[in-house]
Length: 261
Image (cartoon, rainbow, N blue to C red; front, side):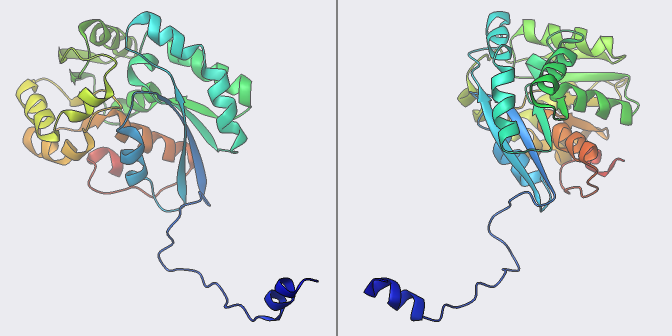
């Protein structure tokens, strides 16, 4: 034994006590694995803020240049590789988290989920599944759709939602594609203004679609303005994932959905 090792062995080391407010969340209750478009800057901070103690988020990125068909096809072609890396972290659920891609066409999300399950033997779901489940929970058959997207992406989401019995009474986009910074730069108050002005008397709920925008901050204010449920992509994903994991804890301050069974 060297002199330094002998000195270390002779010391009495203080016991490390557990903190009442642990700094790190290691996912002692559940771990969510997320496949996320590479340009997205909003989903991770928002979702981490919404998750209850003991539920952790682990992300693998898939390259996405825009919401055009060729770029979505390119991103989806890499699903197995990304999902396998999440499975290496022994996550409990894998979420394909991109609204535009998971709502690309009726049944498109089912194919992605099946591929993830085959590659990893892990339970899997998608943003689209969470949003559709949210509308079912509210019995929302007619909605408004507000997005940052180009028109062709909005059109695809309208068709997808129609295939699930949800009619879009009005839709608006902002013509942004593939620019995560531009999406993030839109202030929550602007989303509030847009959704409130777009509200239709016959609508049952409002849908703010896109995982890359600052929408969750505006949910409560919009619901107060229009007196209807507001569903956003990141909020719906958290709610849906927690339900699938059997975790009853729900964050407050993110709309009526979080209080729904």
